[in-house]
Length: 191
Length: 87
Image (cartoon, rainbow over all chains, first blue to last red):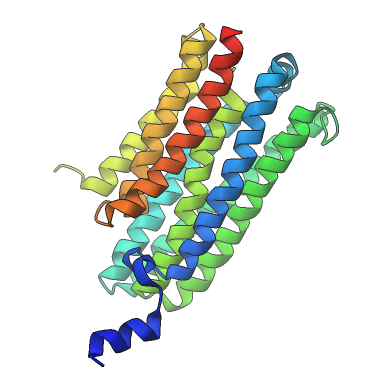
């Protein structure tokens, strides 16, 4: 048995190993894409069936706060990507600093989203107000949970700060970013 | 000094995010506005796939698969509204 065969047997992830980070995170990422894709598809169909209800629901949302959160999240993605680059160059201190920055911006995203929810609840909106708000709170709440989970994952990989760990954590973070980029116009802007 | 690719991507994403926020107030026709904001989302998604997720150098299968997810979701949302507008 050659050294390459032996190595392949030890890792066993096949073509998933060609992706950055630990292949296991990509199994999770693809399952998250499937789940969010189905949710967003359901939202788009419900919007097409009930255009008036969705228009009145959208009018009660704060798209400017959501827009600010888009800027916050794409900036945190850039900071996290910088962290991965530093980790690949074995600059662990720098990688940790970048990751802390990404986590802080994730915290800003959560704070802005909670402020948005507070404003909506103050305007008398809740989970059972209409099917629009049920889907809105479920979709954005599910995404918000992923932001929180992403911060925890970044905090875990921050300790070791080696290339594979940081690439693993930042891959999840970018998935959260990518989902928001698609979710923002579908929920807030498409009329 | 020119920014490197990652920095340029971030600057582009900020610009595209601001453009996305402004579209509904600048474009009154809903079908056009929908197409523009969803098109901008697809462009932003592609940039994140290539430069944040760092799949630019990854095999085409993975790059294509993640980009296809963005495109399918965005196209589905656009088609759902376009069909309703036509009925």
